[in-house]
Image (tube, rainbow, N blue to C red; front, side, top):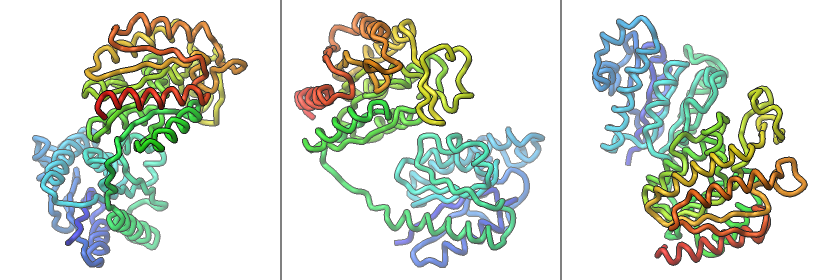
Length: 408
């Protein structure tokens, strides 16, 4: 059986390099290249399997119209739209097994937009210029498992450095394909969020559940982690969700840098997937280095957790707003929901003696949440800190009992 690698590039500027990649791929027995041209300006030096004319047409335009545009941005938007439609169509038809893209700033922008249309698990590698380092990886990857390989030298011609990068890119994709067997499991699948501030609770819950034959997948509640969870809830056979970190809600409301967008904490409820919710890390707002912290929060208790984690504490009024937002989302749930409140604090920073310890602010959250939730949603208060074994044992026990009664 032949493994087909979809190779994407702007062939007007990267034609020689992609032709080199095609030759390297086809020197391996059982592998073939399928070439997509996403050029905005010139023509390809060799025939592509999917031409730039076809890509522009799939976007409702024409390559002539694209080439007449005076700015690169609008042209890239058209070609990205066409590439996304093309890659979805090719994937649905089973035309390729992996994707390898090469490009500078524009090529990487267009190609990564197309790759993000593909499911997690399908091998994807982007060999890019150092523009990807300058711009930051998130804009290219978002919630998908795209391997990013920054080329030391600009991908501009064939020389000993670029040839080495091109060959190693092909080797990496072939390696991913060669080890791409999917592991099957009949264990109930549980998605769980946590951060380093609720790590002790999360690891304890995970251990207990795994000892009871559940499979637990952990997502870091740092913005992109929550986005990924929400997406995967819609595509994986998830039996239940446990939230040990909901700080992404406050980040969305108050301008933090760990927002997962306005739809966080909604997918499981919409699909009727059972949930256990805690207020883990709800008092924390996330920023990166200290210079990213807005003046608005500089008079708060602040934890400099690491050089890229500056965390101000939210006050009682803000905690109430978070509770209202959480309640609105949970009240729309089509499945069973249970809320567990650790009265001793919501994170490692929020226990007695720590800089974020503020029982009054926490009480504002609890009181608002309890008064805002529908009566069908049960709330249980536990006289323990979130990272104490007692609370972890309650979370795990409630999960097992709660979901066993749900037929999981």
